[in-house]
Amino acid sequence: MDLSEERQDEKVFSVFLLCLAIFTISFHPPVLAANTQKGAKVFSTNCAYCHAGDQNLVKANKSLKK
Image 1: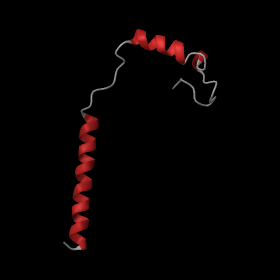
Image 2: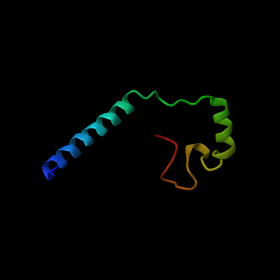
Image 3: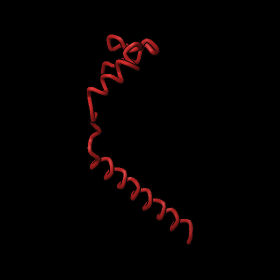
């Protein structure tokens, strides 16, 4: 196999991987919280102190607000 054939094979493989990634992302169901009550308990136990009022006491420029 010469250099041009190897390059062509690399391009075909790259396009295949790109298509596979797009297909996987497109048809993946969204991730949803299974139990919001447990999530609220975990947040209030582990996170609420540093994120009081949707803020971030550790990194001020990173808040929970979008």
